[in-house]
Amino acid sequence: MSHKHLSSAETVKLFQQYVVPNYGRYPVSLVRGEGAYVWDTEGNRYLDLFCGWGCNLLGHCPPEVVEAVREQLGLLIHVPNTWHTELQGLWAKALSERSFGGQAFFCNSGAEANEAAIKLARLHGAPRRRYKIVTFEGGFHGRTLATTTATAQPKYHEDLGPLMAGFAYAPFGDLDAATRLIDDETAALMIEPIQGEGGIRLPPEGFLAALRELADRHELLLIFDEVQTGCGRTGDWFAYQRFDVVPDVMTLSKALCGGLVGGAMLTSAETAKSLRPGMHACTFGGNPIAARASLAFIEAVERDNLLENARRLGEVFRSRFEQLRGECDLVRDVRVRGAMVGLELSIEGAETVRSCLERKLLVNCTQRTVIRLLPPINLSEEQAHEGCDIIAEVLKTQADNSAGGEG
Ligand SMILES: Cc1ncc(COP(=O)(O)O)c(C=O)c1O
Figure 1: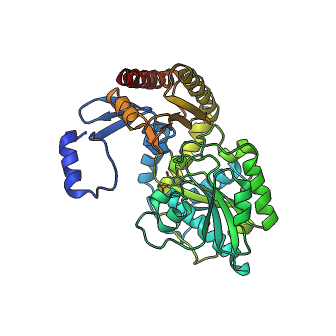
Figure 2 (figure 1 turned 135 degrees about the horizontal axis):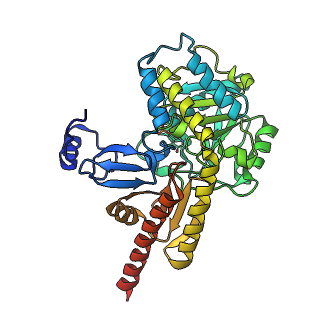
Figure 3 (figure 1 turned 60 degrees about the vertical axis):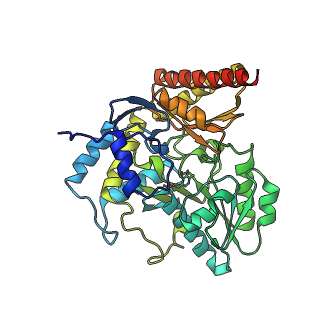
């Protein structure tokens, strides 16, 4: 049944010769996953608290999703969007009923969902010659040229030549700055309700509500990029629900299909009319496999009360890391919303991530100093503690070493 795997060293060699080296990768080849654990080819088991870069919200290979997809593979894999499929219809209904009652356009990734939102904003604004979009510093919206431009982080713009016209950037949380950037050509405001790649940064109290008012006053579309925060990650189906601020457009991907590929843009039926036939498309968007996976994912989250579990896990991580902050000088700040956890360090985090890896724990570092955890929401409290124990041990050792170094 299972074939003999290559060693990690052999796989690394293949990559060196044949794979474009645009990612920094650890020299470990992963071959199997189950729940919160993943195994490398040498048989080592890792606790994965950065599960699939936030995509595997039910852990690796959730049985409900695997089973649904297996069955669907034998029925219908792909048909073009010139046909109706009941699965795409049911998928759109499920998302609509759990959000703000709109309609869905389906695609394959976060960047594609945001591209759709950007094109929608421009088409919606076209009758009044509006095309500009205000986004926020430290945000992250994807890697296509338009979404890279929307991403207000200079390091991602380097050497790309002229970027797309029509984007302006305000500091995250600065309402006056956002207001000043609006002119007669502005079509939309676009923001992550909680910045993910930007370091798990929560907006100041009232900021999203103020953006809603600003958008209403100037008749702009308010676009929430919930690619990372959406689909249960924060302990609600969508992060905007806890802030009680409803966007005009919302983009989803990552966890949407329980670890499979998929993306979506949601908007009201009225606004959706601007994306008139022929103006946008995605060949694989809304395919039966993605739809079945997502429906199985949604059912499992609700059956097992996993939104509640995400909130409970958030409290476990918060209390463990607040305690650690009191014990270890290296921890500057702790930011948590459900299963979205950021630990701001006073040092660069790369070494912390490497030391965790040596202890068979997978975490991420973003913005150089923030240890980011995006664990599955069906993680047990014991597993959460197991991860926290390792992080605490690693950081305390680092603190001891740096104190020793200075002495
Ligand atoms: C908030 C947000 N938007 C968009 C993206 C881009 O998604 P993708 O890599 O699927 O294109 C990401 C990816 O990390 C993200 O976190």
